[in-house]
Each structure stands twice: as structure tokens, then as C-alpha cells.
Image (cartoon, rainbow, N blue to C red; front, side, top):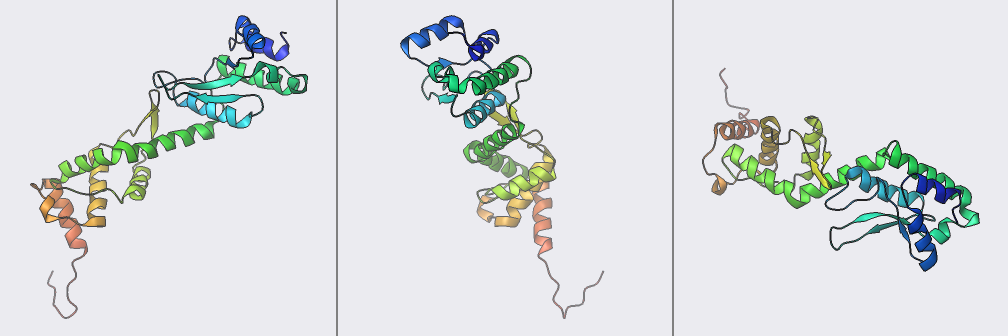
Length: 232
């Protein structure tokens, strides 16, 4: 029963022998324990990236699962009958060694996918809450209301200009270190006014920063008529 691939999984703490015996007996699948499982209350970006990347790269031997009830758990599982087939022995051994290495040595499987996952979370954050939060903060900085609805592309551009990179935090969250610092908010406020102007009805009481930014915005479009003498 315990072929080489199963032995590696057992020795690596990824499955147990009694769970394997039960699954072979009753036809169930086996959940794999390691840095590819998590939930809303456990795991992190590496776990989620590992889960989807491994399921992508080993579709014949691994199954990714995601349960939307309870704590929204996700992970990997195997069908021991398929995993233990003679025809799959070499691939199964290679995969078992890989999984054991991820669990016991270095937990990063696909760094590129991990970066992509963090960017996906960042884009979701913009649509879910970040745009509205920044709208309020920019408004407080100016003393006037602004609209950031059409500034997503400019937002990412400003992040790069200010060398602010999204970072994973917790189980499924993302943060933007420095995004609420005055220099970034000021530049975002400038972009908002340049994009949509300033509606007088939204002005509460312009702050010093608000006067400065609005003054710059008005001055950049000011033109002296060609036939008018300008004295400096």
C-alpha cells in the first residue's frame, strides 16, 4: 500500500498513514497539509498562491478546492487511487518530493504568481474600498469634494512615482505603505482636480493645501493675450 510517493508524503507530515488507509478503503480523497492551505482566518498570500499554482501545474495529480461556507477554506487534495497508479509513479514521486520541500524547507513555489496575486488583491482593494477611502482623505486635504472614479490608471502611476508597492498582510488583505502620507495625497488631489476640475458646490472651506493646489491648477491654464503687454 505504501509506495514511494505515499511514503514521502507520510514522512513529510503531509498525510498520515491511517488517513491514507481510510481513503483507499472508502474511496475518499485526502487533503494535503502544508503551505498551500488556508482560510479567511489562516494562511497568507504564499499559501493561496501555492495552492492555485500547484493545482495549475499538476492537474492530473492534484485537485485544488475552495469551500465558500464556514471559514472559506482552500487547499489541495489527491485521489490516492489515481496518485498511486503505476503509470503515475515517477510523476507522483517528483510531486511528493516537491511538496515535502515546500512544507519543510522553503515554502515559495512560484514567486511570479505570488506577485500577481498581491497585485490582484490591490486591484480588488481599489474597487472595494480604497477609492472611497482616498476620496474622503483627498477631500479633507483640500477642504473640497473630489471624484476619483476615473483615476484608477493615474492611481497606479502615482504609486510607481512614489515607489509605493502593495504588500500582502494577514490572511487575504493588502496594504499600501505610504499611501496616506501627505506627498501622495497631495499629488492624488492634483490629479483629481486636473481630471475633473473643482465643483464650487463641493467646497467646504479650502485648506492651505487646497488653496495652493487650486491656485496651481488655475495658473497652469492662464494665458496672456498675444496683444497684451505683460510686465514682469
